[in-house]
Length: 303
Image (cartoon, rainbow, N blue to C red):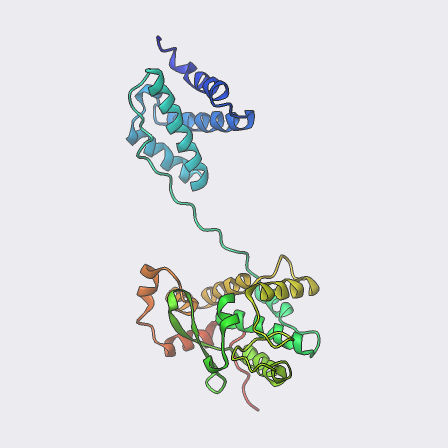
């Protein structure tokens, strides 16, 4: 079959998708929009038709679209549509190339959870009463925010891993990597208040620092539920969950210190290529950065 004019190729492709692949009108609109967007960008590069498009020109167009704000996810979809379009042109015998086969979209940045600002943290970490469950929950929240703990690290934290005199913790995170973390003044005080009432619930002599009313260790799910409860009860904007506190810890510390390496070390970053950069930082340096920068680490001067 003689190939139609290039200006009609996209229309033929869309008819093929509808008739042979039975795609919905919604999906067809996505294909049409993506190919139109690419064609518009290629026009700025003196685009003379689909048959003239090569890999180099396509890469330039993708880079320009990315520079204009199109996300990696959107570009991935656009390239997928382009590959399918050229596969159709090859099948019909109108072209014998597919310039999109080896072109990759830029990676999308990871979407980080929303943070709480220091004022919101201060409001959240103000216990309304002295009941044991309240003291326990607020000690958990203080420690997550104070030391950047993962929820799995807080539930597995054992008494032998806490040094009240030195105000520090020893935790084992992802990849069985152990790190020593400082404990801020507010968190240390909250922990001591919880430990004072903990024996009432500890009928099974559990080694875990945080236990439930029945004397059993907490689960990650129960911690998530308790934090969500307090966030709602205290009117915190947005849902409160462990990683939001952990991310707030990192954001506030980084904003104040500008010491990315120390923050990564304190977080126990899981990426090997990243954590190796920070292994030479010793605990004293981390403590110094922590004391100078974390909004709830500063101890009040003694009278």
